[in-house]
Length: 259
Image 1 (cartoon, helix red, strand yellow):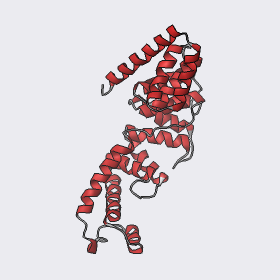
Image 2: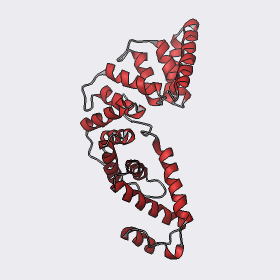
Image 3: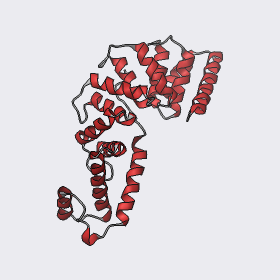
Image 4: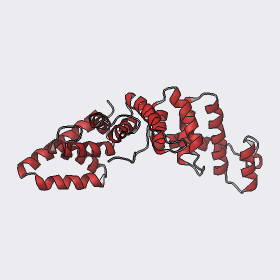
């Protein structure tokens, strides 16, 4: 039974970290260490005075303050980037999930799909907010309907377990499939597992083998184990058909990237 959400939502850490690092480089280039405390808030000034910070440390504080200022004024992209930064604790800034949730909430209320995905995940896990499956379902569905593979996967997990929604394996299969077509490896695994046992979909060893193969190709170890189990029960002819199906599915998913 899928319980752990796995991959992080939206455009993810890498893209936000690239944006943050770009802003930090600009900040670092202009640092005059003899006057470095001039443009930062009182709490940041205390940190600077109490410890020997590097130019990189100062740049981090400066950019973080700039993000907070712009996010407070309604910059939705800064709200999301700040949320990602604080959720993960990037660039030596301690994680602050409660503040991250605040910024995700502001952006999610305005329809930002990545913020909605993060918020849904946080309500499932009770990170930064009280655990609330009903709100998790609300935000995950909003993200899913905007095409987020992470929101789709999270929504499938909720339907699989009956968390915040009525348990519905057919509905879970639908959302696992949508996320699976977008290369979400956990969704591919669970969709393959559904086909293997006929849960939410008709039992089909060929489709099970094909979807498990997609997840295995992305490093999902349990998917690879289940594929080997299927290989033991198929005839040579059936296995050949399943392998062809897996190869065709891989090509179709690869061809659909960017569409």
